[in-house]
Image (cartoon, rainbow, N blue to C red; front, side, top):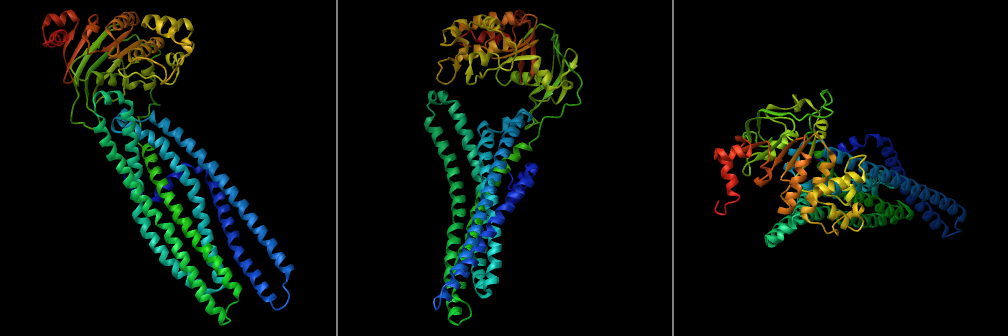
Length: 586
């Protein structure tokens, strides 16, 4: 990730929340007014001190002191109210902004090409939506008003000190300038560690997510020690960047405290000399001691605010990097539309390479013609391009050249939403969410009756399983529900049956079931694929013997095609591949 300045990242954030800018400015004005009212207090306290000092030889003017006390009470009450409303406004604005930002990030996930998720881990993307948005929201809520309030208090104190006694003001300024130079030096070296911290945190989250989702494989592979060593490296990276960023930013507050204490000493010594010479009254020293506290406290606030702002800017940079990522091409001008499809599919001279590696051609001049209602099996060794072929058919990736046509219409002329509604799809990786069996089956579908559910469950051999659950279709599927990998696969197949799309894609759909269940699914698939064009990717070649057309891929090329019987009669690559699955020596 490129290293940007704080102001550039925060500037993008303000551009994002431009509708709230007037409200934010009003809140910052309230913060400044609250700070300005606060610094009037020491001047009034100095007046009280002078009245008391003058009254030591005569009578103390309690009426005058009472009037000043009332003024002080009004000032501090108004300051507290301004500060309260400023916090309320900023909290409301930043929380609403973070809510909208999470929604935009979630929507963005549907607009970026699939290649983005091949380059980034799921954990890193999730970290941007959760950790980074939360960090940015907290930074804006706590930092900006504090910095503005501190700057107003700093400027106000400076003016009031010069009005009260310019000699003491110059002494305090000399001490403060030294602190500001040191503060600037620390800031210039700490930003890169805040950026590194968010990057390392995203990497750690991605690693944890991947390892947790595959913990069964991890244990079976006895890779616990190796994974733990990788975790320690990533964890140490987070620790190191955290330590360096916090150490450098943590130096700011003690530094400002030291400067404040030095300021007290200077005021006391120089003030005592001036008071003994009769140049200033004693009340000026009291006012200046309070002013030094109010003058150095803003520097501490500014230091802390900049620390939070650095963290927020690092998060903002990661958020806007994702929001500004390349999106899928605009399709609003496309007019071609298929309400349904007969199912004629043609691959015409298709060439494809992944965007990250354009020189490595995965699919080389692939051509095939599929008639409506045919069951097409795509087979071949690992890496031959089987799943890639389906990804191209669904336009998850765009082809380099050639065309893919459905009912004579190039898929490039159809909107992706239209294309996707023509297919039901069952993948190798099952996806079920926390919800009832019914909710998982009818996902994003309307008007599904219990009879429909019963029908597809019987077809998939799920009827006994569902009715054995405590609440049947209303049983909530969660981590506590005992459900096998095969049953999960059956549920995703039943979901595809309910979608009832004119075409079907099965990518290793029976890879997680036993032989008996496979036969049940095979019969269900035969019934489901009647009258529908279907594409089946399978390593288990016994499941596709009844396919109308088998395409044999190797190194991105179709080297053989035909029915199971004709390919076996040829005695070629398919025949060897098929026999090797039944020959222990093969």
